[in-house]
Image (cartoon, rainbow, N blue to C red; front, side):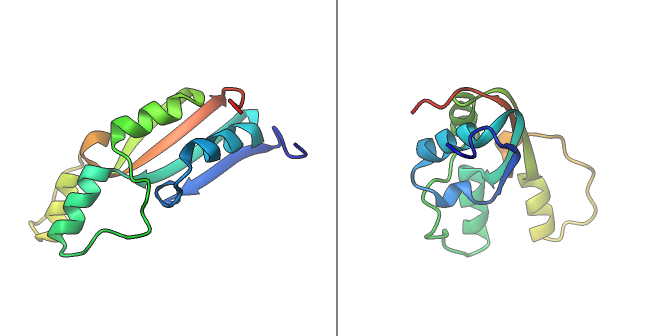
Length: 130
């Protein structure tokens, strides 16, 4: 407990999907994070990620054991944090436009459910459930 509440920010970019014990990790994060700190993460959005890997002719990454949908990620993070924001990164339409070289494209709206990666900003951690 030497570092409990010590960290002002904890960042996990493209890491969560490699961790089989998500609840354990989130309990540790909420313990280590300062009450006014922020947890920032990015992770693939399972259905869009799977689709893009398939059209790209790649197999799924065998190290991905916890790839979540947007809804699953929201439910999981909201069990551990009071204040959450979710954003989509690289929407599916933009990915397809680039993949098939369809020319210039306009900015796409933030639609996490249609994005290949999800970004989350989480604040106000609940006390560890352990």
